[in-house]
Each structure stands twice: as C-alpha cells, then as structure tokens.
Length: 122
Image 1 (cartoon, rainbow, N blue to C red):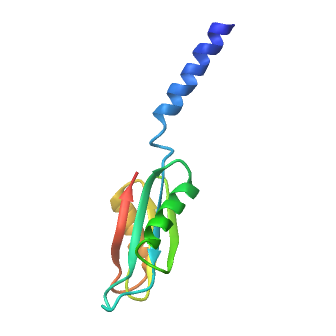
Image 2: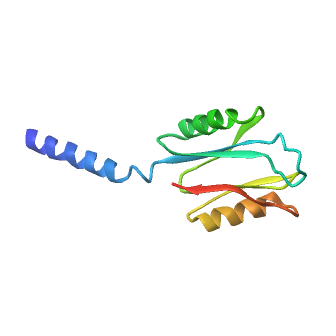
Image 3: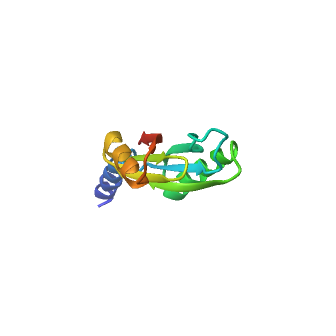
C-alpha cells in the first residue's frame, strides 16, 4: 500500500509539472492618460508567467504604475491576450494564438484608428 501511495504521489507531481505552462496567467495594465500626440493611445504593460490571475494583474499594475499615474488592469489571460486602442477607444481580446487575440482586440475597439498596442502569449 505504501508503494502505491508513493507511486501515485510521484505521478501527480509529474502531471502537475507538465501542466505548469498551461496554468500560467498573464495580464495587461494600461495608463489611459494619453500623451501629447493625438495618435498616442497611452501606455500599456503586459505581465506573464504567473500562477494566478491576481498575481499577474498585480505585477502588470505595479509595473505600469512605475511609468504612469492612471493605470488599470484591463485583461487577464491564460493563452494569448491583446490590447488595442485609438485616442478615444480601446478593446481587449484573448485567443489561442496571438493573431486571434489581436484581431479580437481590434474588433472590440470599435473605431477608426484602433491598432494593437501590446500583445503576448504565455
């Protein structure tokens, strides 16, 4: 019985180790305090590789606040995430590929001049 428990525990550990990347979270935080240039959509920061959505959001927000005063987390994601913006609108998107996440973010922005500001995959 003891051997069975040891083997089961090792199997569980190996199984969890193999899913580590699949369990990683990323987040995007942005500063909507736009710059002087009318085309400037603001500042965005992405954090990745965190064990929980909260940890990813906290890292993205903290890093964003190092560069801006009006930061907020706009997206947490597990696979791929993207943030698009124009001077007056923004949108976020997720997907299984970077291209899919970016297309969804631009579509969610709903406006002329929307373009991908930041995107990443875990």
